[in-house]
Image (cartoon, rainbow, N blue to C red; front, side, top):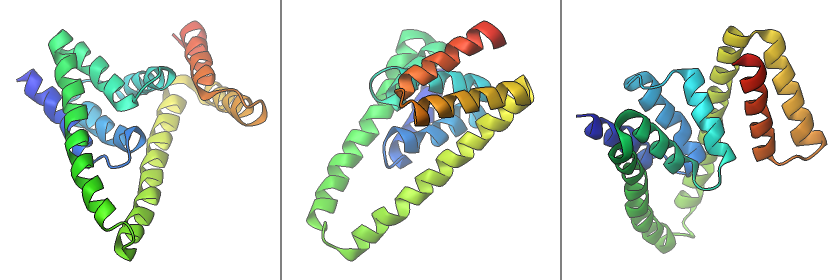
Length: 176
C-alpha cells in the first residue's frame, strides 16, 4: 500500500504541476505533509532546501528522497517514476497541441494566467515557512536569516545554492 501512496503523492503533482519544479512544490507539500503526514512543515522545508542546493530537477530529488525515507530503494524508484512519467507523457501531448496552436490568442492568454497563479502558490508556501520559522525559532533568528539571505542574494550577488548551504549550516550549528 505504501508504494501506491508514494505513487499517488508524486503522480498528482506531476500531472497538474504545469510549469516544472517550482509549480509542483506546493502540490508535493500538500500531499506529503497534509494528506499523508509523512513530513512536518519544517521537515519539508529542510528537504526543499537540500533539493534546491543540489543540481537537477527539484521535484525528482524530493520524490527520490521522500520515497526512500518512506519505503527504501523501491520507494525512491516509485517516487521518481511517478514524478517523471506523467510529465513526460503530458509534455509530449501538450507540446504537440501548443505547437499546432502557438499563435492562438487563447493559448497566449492561458499561459499569461498561469504565471501569476504559480507566483501566488509560491508566495503562500513562503509565508507558511516564515510563520513556522517564527513559531519554532523565534523572531530574531528568523529576521537574522532573512536579512543575511537578502544581503547575500541582492547586495553581494551570491549564488542561491551557497546561501541555502550557509543557512543550512547556520541551522545545524545554532538551531539544531
